[in-house]
Amino acid sequence: MKALLKKYRKPLLFVLALLPVAVVGGYFSGVYGWEELAEDLKQQVQAQLGENLSLFYLSTVLQTVVYAVLCGFFGYLLSEKIGLMKPFHIQKKPTLMALGTALGTGLLLCTDFFYFRHHIPQVAALYQGKPSFAYWMASVLYGGVIEEVLLRLFMMSLLAFVFWKLFFRGEANPPAGVIMAGNIIAALLFAAGHLPSTMQMFGEITPMVLFRCFLLNGAAGLAFGFLYRRYGIQYAMAAHAGAHIVWKIIWILAV
Image (cartoon, rainbow, N blue to C red; front, side, top):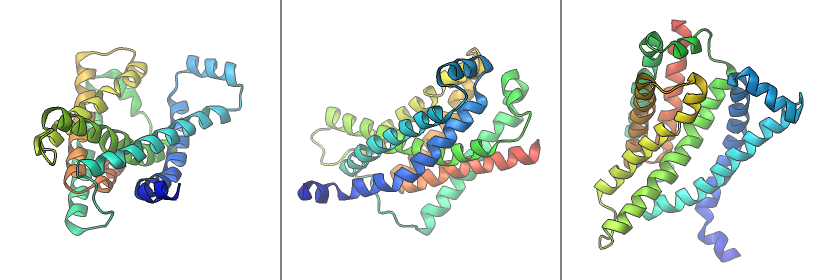
C-alpha cells in the first residue's frame, strides 16, 4: 500500500485538490440546472423527489466528484505519459497567454449576445435578464476547472496516447501532430457534448443553432487545448474560467 501511495502520490494529491472545486462547482451546476429546467420537467422531478431538492443537488455533486476523481487521476497519468504534465508554477509568459486567451475567447462568446440572439429567438430569450450567481459559480468552477479536467487533461491526453500507440509506436515520444489531433477531436467532442442541452433548451437543432454550438464551444476548446499542450493544464483552466468572467461582465454591461 505504501508503495502504491508513493507511486501515485502526485495524481492523488491533484485529485484531492480538485475535490473542493468539484463539490462547490457540482452544487452550483445543480442550482443553475434547476433554474433553467423547463416547468414540466421540474414538476416531474418534484413528483419523484418532493419539494426538497437536496437529493437533486446531491446527485449533481456526486456526479461531478466522480468525474473529477476518475478523469483527474487517469488524466494526470496519461498527461505524464505523453509529456504534457507541467509543474504547477505561475510563470509570466504563460500567465499572459492565458489572460489573452481568456479575453479572446470571452469576446468570442459575446457573439452569442451581439450576433446569434438576432438570428435565433431562443438565444434572445436567454438574455432577457442578467446571469445569476449560480450561473457565475457553475461557469467558473465547473466550466473552467472540471470541464478542462474532463476534456483536455483526460480526453485530449487519452486520444493523443491512443494515436501515438496505434500509429507511432516506434517513436519514443508522441509527435506534435498526434497532440494536435487529440486537441482537435477533443474540441469537437466538447462542442458535440453541448448538443443534448442545446436541443433541450431550443427544442430543435437548426443549421444556425448547430453552427453556434460548434463555433462557440469548438473554437474555445482548441484555444484551451493549445494552452494545455504548450504551458500546462492550469493555464487552460485559468483561461476557460476567465473567458466566462469576461463574457458575463460584458453581458451585464450590455443588457
